[in-house]
Image 1 (spheres, rainbow, N blue to C red):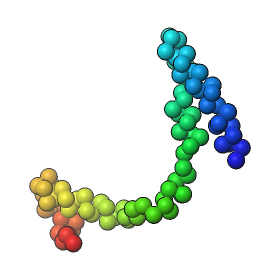
Image 2: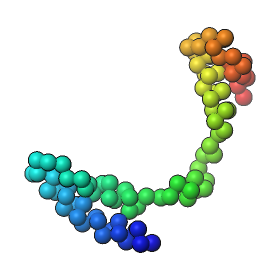
Image 3: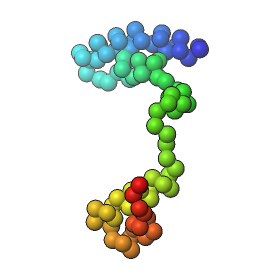
Length: 89
């Protein structure tokens, strides 16, 4: 909770830094867009359980990529190995 209040407190200063940066020759390490993103970011755990697509196991995803490369002719049968023989469902 404290981090959220601290983030909100930085928004006016970050907006001012954006306005001043247009006329200031050196980089000011404060940007409104970055501060706004930090304040309104959704935790990854909450986003993952929001009912979106379910991630696939890495092995399955890699096998699918190799199979696709084999099917399009970018890999030989020997390079693709067992993944080249997958059947599409």
